[in-house]
Image (tube, rainbow, N blue to C red):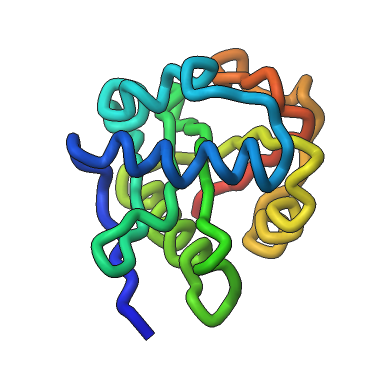
Length: 163
């Protein structure tokens, strides 16, 4: 089994990140969304890698196979964004999603975050189970902080209390 490295996003990763995320959104889940509709993916350092935020990639054999962003919202709160894992490395035997989440939780504790919020589409049923299994609690949209970066496709919301 090839080793999978979890590391922060670097400047040359932008196109590879898009090549992981867009096919999952468009082909696998039938969400009619483009790269242009997700401008944060073109400015990852500014959008996620500032304040207490970060953006990680999972790399296998030199190729990006997973992504996870953490957007600082202020007030010791952050938004989990763009968590995607390529189909060929999903599941417990690879542990990519779990390792991305573990890295994010360790970072959140280290920088003093209190809460992590996320929004997702109701189509990502497996993701809902994954988030719930890992300590996220479903909340109403009205319970989100005003600073939460809402996406048009978001219809289900979660909160994780750090620590």
